[in-house]
Each structure stands twice: as C-alpha cells, then as structure tokens.
Length: 212
Length: 188
Image 1: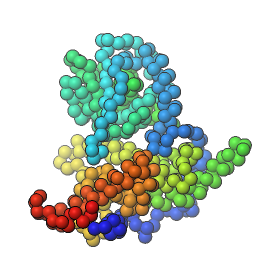
Image 2: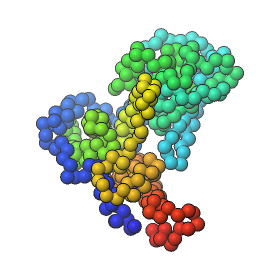
Image 3: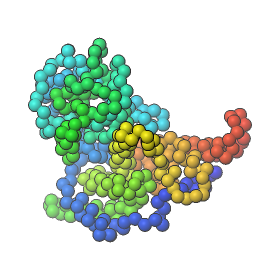
C-alpha cells in the first residue's frame, strides 16, 4: 500500500469529511464568538508557539516563580527537594513527572495566610486523583492542569518523605481514589493550604487563581 | 502606530485568520470529541489565537491552532476520564465507558480492517496519521502543530505509516511470526 493509497483510504474513514456541514465563519453564531473574543484583552507574549497555551507565558511564570521562591521560606511548609523529572513512554500514552513532599521535620513550618493572589503565582498547579500509594510514592492521575512549567503529563508521582509513618499532604491524609488540588514550586508540593483535598472551596479558589 | 491603529490591525489579521481556521478547527474537534465539547475547544483555541497572534507566523495559523486545540482536547479528555471514574463508582453495575477512538466512530462501513488497524495503534501514531490524512497536513505543518522539528515529524509520520501497514497486514494475513512474506517488505 503506497502513501497515496494509504492516505486516500484513511480519508474514507474520516468521520467529518468536507461534505458534512459545519458552522460557516460568516454565520451569526460564528460572528458572535469572534466578536466576543476580539473584545478580550490581549496578552503580548514571546513564548514559543508550542508552549502551554492556556497558561501564562514562560517569561511570566519565571518571574512568578522567582517571586514565590523569595516568599517561599515563609509561605510553603517546606521546600526541600528540587527538580522535576519527566519520563515519557515510547508510545507517549502515559507520560508522568515527579514531585516531592518535603519532610516537615527538617524545614520551616511557618505559613502565610491563604490568598488567591498568592495561589495565582504558583508555577505548577493541577487536579488529580490518587491511584496508587506505596511506602515511597503517591501517584496521581491528572485530570486538569491549571498551570505547568513542563509537560502536561497524565500522571504525577509524588515522592513521600523518608520514614514517614502517615501518607499526608499538608496534614490531609492521602487516600487512594480521593481527588486533590496540588500546587508545587521547584519540584516540591506546597502546603499551607495551597494544596489539599479537592473541596468545592479550594476548587473555586483554583479556578479564580488560574482563570486568567 | 497608535494603540487604536494597532488594535484595528490586530482585528484585521485575526479576521483573516478566522476565515482560514474556523471551519477546519470545527472538523478537527468534532472528529475527536462530542459536539458540545468541540465548541468549547474551538472557542478556547480562537481565544488563544487572538491573545498570541503576534507570535504566529503568517501562513502557519491553522497548523498552530491545531497544536493549541490538541492541548485543549487533552484537558477535556482528562476531565472525561475523571467523570467516567466517578460514574463507575456511583454505578458499579454498569461497566465504565470504553474509550472510543474517532476512527472507530467513523460511520464509513468500508475498509473495516484499516479502521481496526488504526484504532489499534498507539495514540501518538494515530494522532500523526489522522493529522496527515484527515486534516491534510504535511510533515512541515505537523511539526508546527506538535511543536517538533520538521525532520522529527517526517520520521515519526513515516514510522506511524509503517506500523499501520504492519497492523493492517497482520489483520489481513494473521499467520504467526516466521510466516511473513515479502509482501511486508514492499513498503520500505
């Protein structure tokens, strides 16, 4: 089967061939959508075309990350392990990356009050459900990336502090099947209310913080 | 140029781009998700195009939008997986919905073997092949959509075609390994 033949046969499987009508760009509906979009503020950016498109630019993220690292000593319960590892399977069907929960016993424990504006500065934020917990790692299946400074992977492995007797995220026990909202800075999960079980209140805060 | 003139210029370019991308984007989304979600994906993508128009190379608008749309679809897909899991927990007697590929949804009755072979490929290969055959992109445009080099796109596309042919051949000629014929070599 040569290329032309293969392409032609694949085209036959197209569920939306050109003969199936769609909204014309001149339709009332399309005009309404386009006009609404053209009234939204623009955001001049210089990121590469393939970067995360629903999130602030890499430049903005870098600035924000710098800011949170300055405030991080007081803000996060802990920042101990840095470095995000991204591993892709060959077929790219189950990408994953790693974060860590810092050992609270070795780090500062003071917190700043929870604030949506502060939350909005987090460079990494996602919603995910715990699918597996071992003695060293909790794995979350991500269902939504609010923001990331690397790939939008399907899975996130959260390394747990060594010798931990309970598997907890910011004082909230991690439970398989439970959904959580998580932020991280420099590869480490943030505490102090900036990560936690996906309550309606926290989800509302995440939506507000990352909607821009 | 005054800010008013800049805005007018931006609007003009966006309007020109919309003429090119609006209908193909709808097809792209509707090939892969239900209509209601497809509308969201199209609107999300156009909004990103509007905001980042300055960064888009003239002539690359459609391929660039496909790249944005596929990431939007990925977010919708993750939400759908979560919804299915929740539904499965709430209704333990009902088996969870099976992921259905766009190809498997195709209503075309012909070429069943090729459809099954396509559905059996890894998601990455299937995406490349559908961008090539359904969206009509060549390797250079696929590279823009996937944010990879043109060379990488050409190589991945070539390999995806090979794997599709192999899957297809296996369906047509399901003899065990060691019985393959020279027919499998003719594609190289």
